[in-house]
Length: 599
Image (cartoon, rainbow, N blue to C red):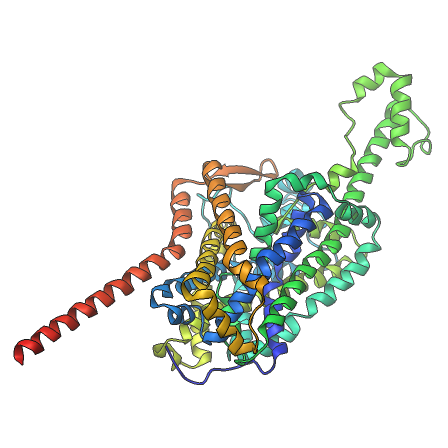
């Protein structure tokens, strides 16, 4: 490993902002609100906050301590602890590479939506006219304008993963732009990143605050906020609620990728990372809750709008069927009239019942959506109904871009920093080396811009990191606690901070966190086994909706390779080091024998 002078953050603020920019990402906006919605609103905060202190903060602290002590990236840091553990750092690099390949396509979609927001009418506000100019395109009529714009205009999606198509030129150009900006953000390493994070870490909060003010003033927003903060305590008896809380904390903080180790390696040796670990963890979780209030306000607006539209359709059906005066039924007394008409005209009403919709605000609010469905369909649906929709669209997708780009800084740093620690690569200038890494990721990721690219994106997102990260962090905490040793780790921290960590951290590292990780790993494996053949959501243009399909054989093989490739780095590297040492020992023994005979 190179032993030259290492770059440093100019001040601790840059490091904290870099960690915040990396940890606070798209998952805070589109994953956490979904989990709140699915697991009883405010009740989900109990297991979430508990897991934050039992699992999140201790493991965050541990990775920062390793990086600051060793002053190396993930490969060098774990190799310094033991040459047999070099594969642990390599596994982190491979996992981060997988993430980098597909994560920037989300930023490309955000660019696509941002560019299309500068139009008099948002293109996802209404269905486009067909080629004959006789009416809307059929696929759009069967779906919704927002779904059509995402699946057809943005992705030009194929019916299944088996049907490949050409590269979507518009998406490819947006993907190129996303990687170009990523390169400019890291062109001079930590010197560039340290300046960029002042913007990428702070501006999303400005947009969220603006959206909060706008959101709570929308019609029906209070319904969504009430739904979020009304706890359903029965969900606490559901094991899945606790598992999802632990998993969300784990992935939201970005543990196991090597990004935190890389960032901390640029700290001054006596930097107080203990306080910073607590601050960043609390900011990350606070942002999740804050963004959920914004999301549920918009959920409430959208749900109330759908609910009132449903009541209006019911009102019109009743007026037309029973020839009532126009102003006799309003959306406020629809249910009262339904009961009255059902009693007065039971036979006629029975024939009508099949035409009446079941209008229920609670069911509208409980419809849980996550991921790209929330970010690019549900939010777009709500934005198009707002006054000055173009302004809110621009603000929203700028925020998504900054969240995505901030996370990309950490993802790409997790690859570049460990590789730059090798002497053979340290002599290459930052501009050239970082450019080559970005170019390779760009070329490898172009497949995500094809018509089947979204299905591959889903595969990488579902199977590229989950198992490997749980395995990596489990090995990390067991290694530090039982092989490197808690007492030795205590002394290292005392050397850096001037005091030893208290009993809480030691109990977490030695007992609670490893047990939680083992439980999560077992739960994940059992779920995969019991789930049967993995499936994905394929877009059916004839039905205008997504339908579940099983992955073909080549997809299953690729999923297996994704899951195993990064994890296998750990045992393979250990075997390689063992073989090299044994080979060296035999050579040394033979040399000693030759010298003895010669003597």
